[in-house]
Image (cartoon, rainbow, N blue to C red; front, side, top):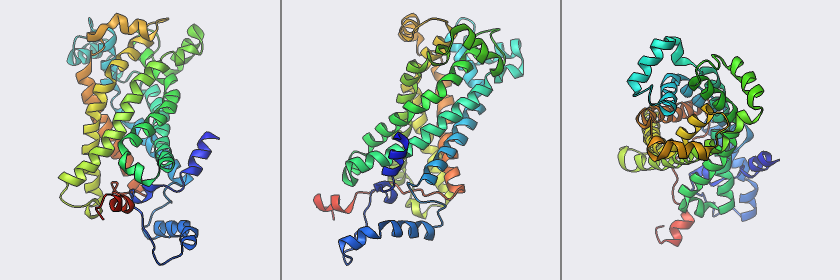
Length: 355
């Protein structure tokens, strides 16, 4: 019921036109309102879009883009993620990134670097489905609640609230696979595969084994995602305004994707810094049986919670940039609507004397 009502409310959104409104002065008000959906559908057909912005198909394709972008990128950086997790939970043995790779190769061989790839692929694909799909849903839903002018004036807050709402549900989907991944990567001899890890975890700790890290996961992922989406959206807007020498409409699809990648990398660096302490707690928590997030944080201390920051900045910066690039590329390939950067509505320009 929640998701269906959100999608229904998202059918009419200021985001369709980049916060701009087209006024038809000659048409009576009732006629203009009656023909709104017809005009929108015709516009979608004329531009070659495969679906209408805010439709069920649009949100489903956004979710598909999230699955592809998050699942593929996280699986790709499994070796770096494995070394990062081991640095966080056993700094005495894994003294640096290079040393972590060297020790892992000596003990487990090259295959050992991809330990935990299956729960990574499954978990982050599910997370991507909800993260990107629900972000688009919540963004247009909240924009309808506050109106077109407020959507423009408070757009950063809109991005933050929408991404936080989406990530809340995304982490519930991610938590079981994240717990299994960390257990496989950081507990020697526990399990080599996902099929071994799941029944062992269930038999030893029950269902709590899969969700005991949910709260610290929220603590890590929600700030990360809020930064990821808000910083990306505003950076993209600033790049087109001050750096790119021509309007986005005049850029080729390839040029637009390059700008997307640059904005994504900038956002990724800030994401890594904001979410790193909670990430360290999650890694240590899933390694230690029966411990709470508070216990782990107290044991690690302020300095310990920042262990492995450099590899995580490299990993998350590259990861976030790649995710936005892939997500936008999927939109281009599927001919989905891609509204331009937000513009001040005409009504607001008149109020501010800028019309």
